[in-house]
Length: 371
Image 1 (cartoon, rainbow, N blue to C red):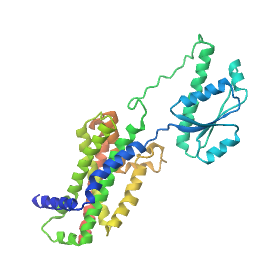
Image 2: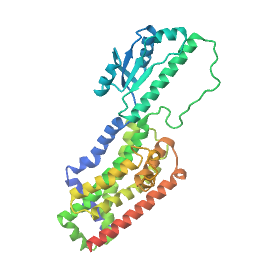
Image 3: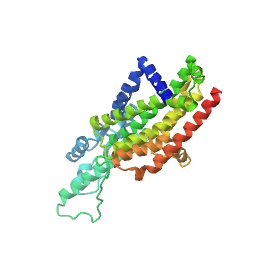
Image 4: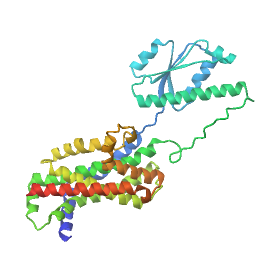
């Protein structure tokens, strides 16, 4: 362990001497968290919409005011006819269009059924579906208000849904995304740093010098990876502090458990970084391999961007073999649900198996390449 300690100290000295590396290691994760914390959201608000009001009555203006008062819509224009809708959609000036036909006010005043049309751009299918749901709910609520105003003593339907959201009552996507950013930053920092750090030794010719020293194979690997593990541990503290103090994300579970399972996740990412170094000859090649062949597919298939349940069934087993998939369940479960190891043990066991497996494979490849 004394030899390992000296090797770790050597790595830390090299990191300190590289003036460009320290901002990347500690400042860049904080900046990325701040940017992604505000930008990475699935909430749909302030949807730009236009109104085609062919009725021009008090009732039609009252309906338009319902949309203007809603935080989900922004009425950008009231146009004369349906021909203007396509122009606004083509220029991305609106996502939705509310078309109120002539005679709408007369039908509402007489208590007859009245129909309005909601047109959607549809380019962004997910956001469009959410916006259409908001619009349908708003119109239905407004219709109920009109019915109560006309018949205040009328009984409501005996069927009513009492909706309660358990872990995220405000349905704020920030509470879902920011804990995932912790996992994303750890995988980016540790894989890239670990792979490039070892390849840098090979480029400088000092890796061969280390091979002829009394260092054993495991000592060399531990000494090279441990500094980046320490950096990852510091990033866990920093990111958690920013998430809880700045963004006010509730940490309902145990921080000790979060930290312990984060270290288990680092076992997988550092092992993957070591494996990338065994198949790369230059730092540029290591970075390209890590980003395009490992990190990008892992981010897309892990559930960080798209729910795993929505993926084709043939892809879901691939997602189950990605360590980031299991760590996202862990970090979101601890942050939002406050669950413990009694619930998260399958994900912890998967991370342990993945970490031991990739480290073993990378060590064997490293020994083979050195020989």
